[in-house]
Length: 130
Image (cartoon, rainbow, N blue to C red):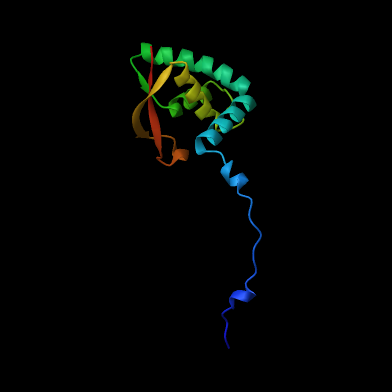
């Protein structure tokens, strides 16, 4: 039995509209939109936490601890009884806001997370800017 199709038996497919593919956003654009959504959703938390971060960084610098991880700041927040944000992505938005306001800069280094729930994953090491 012959299972190959003759050229006449092939069905022509309709032309596909590629416009949606051409309008696809870049990863950077999608990231920016996600950050904006988190900033809108967690605006109050971000404002209060940025103020707390500013004070905490000043105290860390005064104590001779210029580098930090946001994991350390999260622990500080938890000790103070401050509720976490509605979205865990707000921590990344907070780091971006702090960098944009010249409160902190990434050192270019990664360190191992200390929290057991983090399973020793790699986290960014930041430097407070005084």
